[in-house]
Length: 304
Image 1 (cartoon, rainbow, N blue to C red):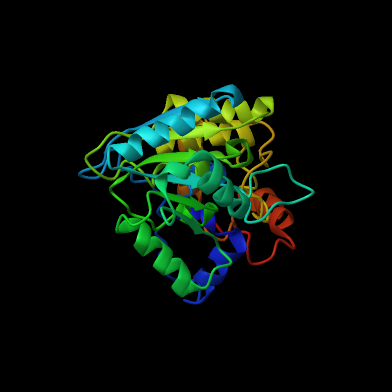
Image 2: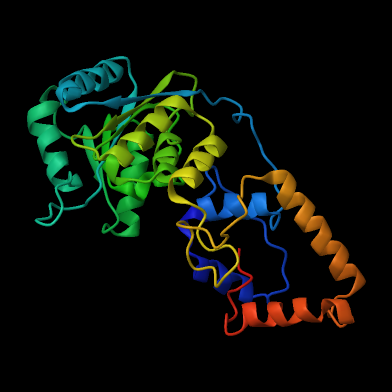
């Protein structure tokens, strides 16, 4: 789950081995920087482009505000068929600064106003401030079917496997990035039943609306990552490397120009094989430029 680690965190892990260990990065949705480094030739790539056995494609829909009751009715229908649902909220508690759904308040509202017919003890709550044993107990109750609905913060993003869960309803979907939304979607579709991801966003910005439409169009995590790269940019590729998205260091080259990048990489490898220290007279100007470029860049310059 590479997108959950920052550049410095990954560098700290690498340094525990003295910096000499091989690095294997795995993710369902590469962050923009990683995809850019792959295109740039700094990472070798293996793509697993098939769903694991037993997985089902997840139908994804952006639900406008006036269709919220219909979304709840759909969840209700799935529960009547014996299925379960996740409802993800951006916050744990309500905030004066942010107009976003909070898990604790939403849990209370769903129990008393939206799904009162489910009865007491059928809607659970999970968030990151709970003790580890309480979180484990909550997940066990949901996995065992004691709870029909689990209201949660983004803590359910990874490591959750409930094959009977067929609905992922995401409140404030416009507040999450593409990679995170795709990870949420991956919590359902793990069993034999058709699964659904409902994206609720009351007033998304144009950029957020585009993200939601991308999720509607594609199930492919790599395609999601490519769109993320297009929208957010690759971040720092050649400099200190702390930015994982944003405007690229390159001023002329396009990271999507694969043929040119491959040719440049081959030329660089050939030059390094011929003159690794750049001591030959014809390479002195290049050596000076390389020293100037990397001067003061610190130990994270090569972090990927």
